[in-house]
Image (cartoon, rainbow, N blue to C red; front, side, top):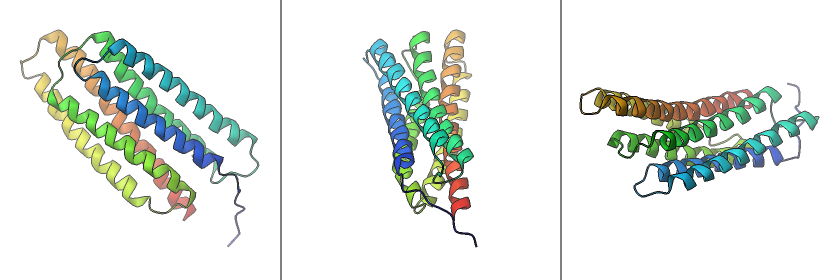
Length: 205
């Protein structure tokens, strides 16, 4: 078996961890956005700033890949993971923006459940990123993300059923449907990141 040259530069792992921490921040801002009495314009401003900082970190990862002779794992996998993490932040930003633009005040309990799932996904993703260095202890991460994504799917379907039950005005149905669909997109984006990590771990094992 051919030996693989391993770089001593640990900055890739640090940058991935930073990206994941931005997702924790974004998920927290999302929860604040739908909480009663929040200053939504201020929260949305913070979210735009957080999304911009996350973008900058993604660009830093790409620049380091392009300037590095040896990378900790395949370049395409690094690009995919960096892009996947950034996509999650974009989804969170979209939800916050929709809540602000649509001026929705009351949310079904199922929406709160989706947001809680997103926060949990962000936390365990942030916990998983440092483990890329050793490629150990990651199985529980993608298994739990998959479980959470399945739970999110069920919550999404229940929310749609509630929206079309006749208890909501048509315009509210349209607004809430957009929001819950974007929430579902964020949960799916977390699962995509977990799938990428699993693929990397398999290749490196």
